[in-house]
Image (tube, rainbow, N blue to C red):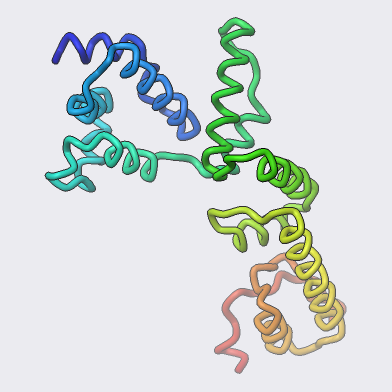
Length: 225
């Protein structure tokens, strides 16, 4: 077993320190398993050995019956350390050639993009087209709107038509709230308006009804009521 672990370790990149590198780690590990023809029953033990100190965190989530289940341990590792799909996309966009050949850089970019598509659940060309359009539309949003969309999407992603609809609804409600806030002179009423439109997260809206500028407080409702 020690010889097998050593040979797999040689063909596998180091355990990542950055969350976005876990995809590369498992790609290289599974390539090593294939190259060395590692039996399924040994894969989990080798993975835990490679994880070293990090394995102690993972073991708290693993039942005794799953200690030899490679896929289960892998899924737990990814849940614990895996980055968001958006983080993987940003990493892909910002990637630059480091101490590597252009072929190695091309391979790293390919792996990164394939990992992103996997996280987004893309398995066909039509879905890929929709994802690329949605990503481009999302890229054009201001920070406030992007934050709102991220909350609405959660771990999924909106297709182009859905994303466009969400943005239009958000802009319409935001403009309406701005109109009422400018005319409203009661602080409590301003907050109630924000709550009624479901966008209390817009904490940077300025209250100017009394010719002053100050940030809207987040928790003054009970006092004012």
